[in-house]
Length: 364
Image 1 (spheres, one colour):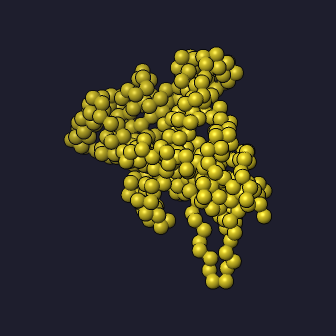
Image 2: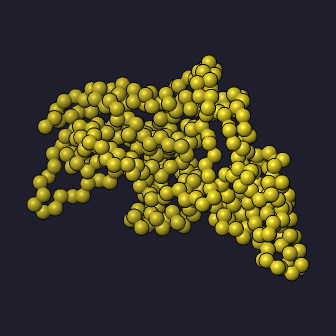
Image 3: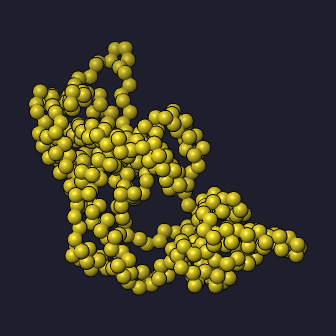
């Protein structure tokens, strides 16, 4: 057996899945991101805040037991006494399960797979040290955010898990492992990255196009109280009164998504009223007139169109021009931290984890 020294080059980023937003990466759930035909994505700078980073030890199912006549596989390595077998290597994939691009040759390299498995086990072992900082409430919030991101209900999530023969308890345990790994990554790598004001100013200067808006855009959500064509005055009056009541609740601070789910007659109700991103020319004249003076987060008065009565919330408003540095400073800081964390993560695995754990390889 050989003592494993610095052998993990280039594998650490395959061990922690770093994405924007709470993600199902590593959980092997076929969520997908559905959107309406009118939905558009507003230009934005990628961020990597602690809340937006899901650092995970990707889950790889254990290999099936050998059937009669099958040759028992050999041990090719061990991590703190836990064996890694040739069957583990053969069945392991270094590819992100959410990546649909064609496999490249490196994904079949046994050495690359073995390095990834060893790195994964090192991360899993290190993450156990952070078990005490992850509560059941943290797990609940992670799952709630995951459901919101993927626009599914808790019932739909459980149905998908059941279809994959994964129990809800097992799923929660995987989420817990992800959060533990995220805590380890945040403490040991992320929090140690220092970004100066000079770094931020230089990034702002070098990426001027990323902070320049050329087209005005509104990101909107709505509650629609529908009115049928040629409705009698009493029906119209009843609908207006209902819309006025909803508008008062929204203006008083009620959760707009909840109001949409409860009261809206539009298909967008299932997404909390989310409509997407629009240019002024995309909008009905009455709608545009009702929102053009609103600030992000504000709710319109009741707006009448041929479809009924609308209550609109302006979730974001992009105004043409250069975004002031003060408004994007924290975003840039997170972006720089995110980029630097890639190399720092690899270094942590190579230089720290390998030295603090006993790893042996058995070359064949």
